[in-house]
Image 1 (cartoon, rainbow, N blue to C red):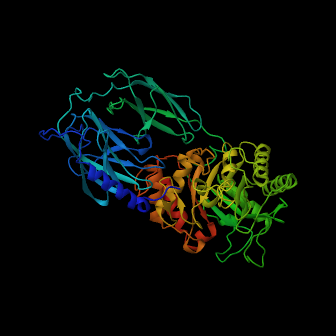
Image 2 (tube, rainbow, N blue to C red):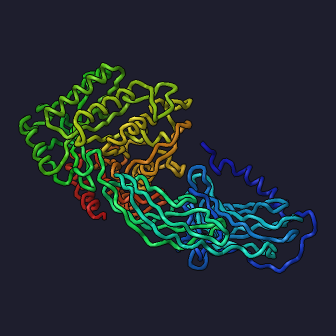
Length: 614
């Protein structure tokens, strides 16, 4: 982990004091020159023309908040990318300059490098209003250009900058290149799979002789760097969904052309049971085998809002047996439980209405450790028996507690070696092969077993809990067969997101940050590589249906803000996702019973909201 800027500020301030003290020192007397702003596009009224920004910064010109004019720069630090934007400027040797900018955000830095004397830098923290930064320096005797730059700090979120000024004499290096490349043409979209589309276009030309990069915007979103070639593959898309793409060209000076015409393409229908479920789904757990104060609900009485009904729970006869059993709630606990024949008839009614009914294995009390081949085989046999007896559509894996863990040295999520993980993957593949394409496979891990893997991975890091991130190998191995992953965004401690900030459950930002990790992908701690993004149609997020259903209850308004931010790119809070995900599949809740107890607040409100999405 990187230390926070707060801990490093004493050293940083001391360094800046040295820079400030040396800023007025020159090796030869400075020339006295009339002041003039020699920054090109200082107020970002021409977008990012003249500026070069780091690839992961999401840099763009925004119309609000601005300090002056109609635009300002906005960029966001992500991981090791400090959202640096810079411009190389021609200057005169042995001359005095004043660099200034108006900035807004948590820890914004302004500086100049290549001065030939003492490079300068300064910073400010002003999240609610613009504040001005300023530094002076003198160029060296042979200095003909300097680079001015802005950047943020680790995990500080978005910053804005406006009205950048470098006052001093312009250099003799010739005019600054302000001419953008020609607009790329001939865009075509094809090569469709269930999760990707292939793009190609004709090359642009530039007065400098070459194009530095092309940028691709999907559905008018933030551009992605496509490199200097004339093709690009858009990945992580939802199945059977249309997308619009535009391409522009940028040169080494940071000048970008206008976007070419938008061209659309549609992904194919996916596997993993895609096409049998609606575009947006509500997933709920039905207390079918126990009572817990929320009341028993007969299968036939499950409201129509639910698309996937998970029977909670199938549990093992012992932790390591692999022998999974399911029984209906006893009459002594659930006085209104229906007879088995009526229960099965209720399942058939739901299936006839297009619903999917699954057996969920595990839960809080159902520890399942497939430590041996015998346990693996018994798991397949016993789960198959439950599916066949009740005519179910598939399986939900809700392994919690100590069901999954790593042995020391198991560091590669793509090639796990720990038996409880290897045997579970093997069992799931066997079940998928047995029941075929219509088999619905879902998973409901806690954040501890998935997103925590960005910060701690239990197989190799000294001091890390050996369960941290232990679902990642299973999800990765089953990614082509997985219908839906709905991580439990509840009963969770604070989790570090891709902005390297801790996020706490119960707010829309938590759901956005946790879901963004699954849809954007993330590097796994300990050098284990990057966990790749899942398809959008494979991802939902889970919540308690009521305050008494679990820690992390989130109000209807906050949940819908999270959905809007992820699927529409609107209503976002401080955390900004790495993309817009119009194919987000839906929501999961614990539980259908608690939702009924809470007057169906979850299902009625969120069904309407999901159905309102494009």
